[in-house]
Length: 483
View: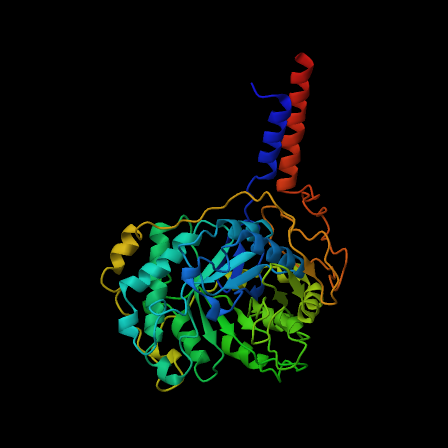
């Protein structure tokens, strides 16, 4: 029989490693909604692609969600910032993403994932649509589904990103985007334990933006069960540069375009850097009443400092990192948000029905106005019906380490001490916490202990761990008394 001390240690280790899961986010009309609390979910997000798209190399055995230690560092910094969603563009579905996805899950950060990549045959090619839309391509994007379908913090997949950037592409590409969306949603229906939203991320090209949105978001034959319709629409927009007004940034025009939306719309990228350092004057507008009456937040571009100079954090080759002034400025903006108002639901918004597809929805001549969607390519339906061969299926894993092991510095060079993640209760997403980490030398988030320690918060996982520990102590104490 094991000794009392060994039993105590074993059960305590089990208690602190219990897996906690956030609640799924569903699409209801034009809102994202927490499926348990019913709260509206507004995306407070950041693009996360360390190394940039050019650095994506499946042969390296590395992608943005494959190194748990680095994800722990970044999740801690994002949690302090107030992020609740990350967008990841390029992923290798053959790698192990369990630890990274589980770390982000533990701190209430959701994943929006692109299923495509910039490599040949890994996305639709506007110049060769029939050639690029094949079963090998479908097998690749279905593999991404398999790798992430079991993570409760998976918010959704993008079936395409800026595939249409001019009228010429608008004449041919839209039916294929709907076809890929249909195939993804059918695969999810047959092979996933839950429904996962699928949407599209568009370039802010105003000549085709209204038609792109109208074409992709309507119901063919008026059927609400039409699986080729996107579940949400993302917009990559950089029209607000510096200290502009709502009208100068043409946000009023966006509200006009999307005023009758029946699906969630958000900025899938935003954060112009023409004026530096960025002050993020647009953030109060993005989360203000005018925009949130139509849109559901946005994703700042981007987390890591790359050659294009959009970064919030400078990552170093040895794993250390330094916050940039943009991080501090964005944090201050987030700390001013009225989270209670942002989470308030709207019964009329969640009950909306998409319009029936019709050529009358299309404004520009030359843009596709036929809703004849290409059939699934040869071999594709077998994949949808039976699943891909030898899928790499991801699963939540216990998080036993909360302290960040590498040095991270504030924008003024001061060391951020006691940097750690703070696991949240099961029904919570991360929100801005009102703290300012600018150059702090003791920037521990409330509720986290020193390096190597457990969160001091007694909610969620912490309460369960403490309860188990107290029970174990009582049992062990009784056993020792009888011995």
